[in-house]
Length: 635
Image 1 (cartoon, one colour):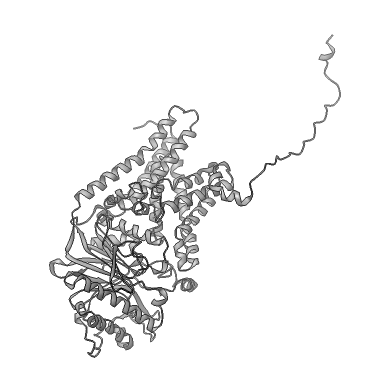
Image 2 (tube, one colour; image 1 turned 135 degrees about the vertical axis):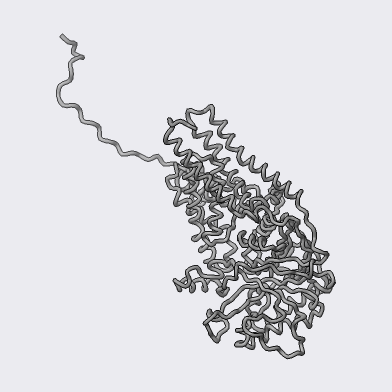
């Protein structure tokens, strides 16, 4: 007989208790405005949308502090770390939407100086360029999933991202990471020492270093915290990831030292180039006839003062910035049909010859709008689209022009330039949305929208095979190429001039659109990079600044003479983005020439970086195959 407690209970089982509603514990939260203000600090503690927002704020802050005129250029070495966190936060479940937002905010803040023209310019740039960060994020995630090392992955992918938006999408290359290496700010921690190394692999070498550094730092902590069961090898792998950027930094330091030691830089034979800066506001540039005349008189007066103070025997030439001649120069076919404009063109040369008699001994380089007639198209409005428009720099010889009291000569036969025009360079690389309308011929509303946000008329591209023109005479002449305005931002165009034999690049520009914004430091840093890449002197001729000289190693030099408004003299300071901003005067210096015929970057261009991208793809494929077949014999 069993014990009573061993007898199973009879009857149906008792019903299960009904589930009780879950009571959410409430916790006291900070007020919403304060939470958003503290997002950069509290972001890591909140893995949701608030956390993503925090890392976006950190990334934007690092970009603003590292890009010129940011005070801490060295922060570029970690500026991409927040982006990497966004890509892999919570396993990357929402990386696409947040990376896209990251890209749009990044470009919107970095290109905020475009708002000086029209706010739509900033919004349009953010919308067009922002998706490039999706490509960057996808490339990084793809390579990491195939076990490519973090440093190599991020360094190569950021170069690919900058390359895409520079050349393939038609967008300007900044805010590129390499600008921080040429910012010239006091707290760059020696980054500017690397500048001569651009002669080997271009400015992309610095972007590569910045990407590698960010990738290695993030990968270091990712490896240490993400390898359970491999605690013994994790520290070794983590520290090994930091060796790649350290080795790259060492190589760049050695290349910079070798370039500086081997470069033999000498001044062109004893004469100075005078660069006129008249500080013309856009309202005056597009004003009435009397205001336009004032614009021309101001340039002419500064030119005469500069020549008188320097001495005509010490002057190599006189350079005026982009479009600073207020009347268009016409080709001979249009000159016959528009005699009033032809009269203005001849009048420009008459005034130069008469008001500055010494000018007859000098070459003058004038920024002009060149109007030409397209074959088969005739229209009796000079500014109709039937007529072509070039943004040009003309080399003229005033001695060939008639005197002030001489009658205006008839235009030369069609296809023949006037006798005073020695040579002309036309702008080739136009700014999309500013100087031309992509797909405008197919979709006319796009052209209407472009005209709404930009007062610049649509321009025509110049020929790619233009030849450098000589400044000076005989064996002492310096061969100069012209990069007008934003052409400075496209390294391929600058390389074309160097390969054609140019020893100097003249950046004739009108940056008066952008006020006193940080754009001036960015474009100056870009000029340093181009000079170091190609081993040439870059002369910046800015209407409102910057006006400066940058030698073949990227170093700034030259002096700026501010016109005394009342005392009639001139104050002298080193030329640069600060001293020349919205000031009236001229910059002067002898052109420095490098003994190096062509740098390695001039010869190779960007092919090494394309090969690096290809090598990353091959390496990723090999690592992926090994991961999918771990038992396959090696070798």
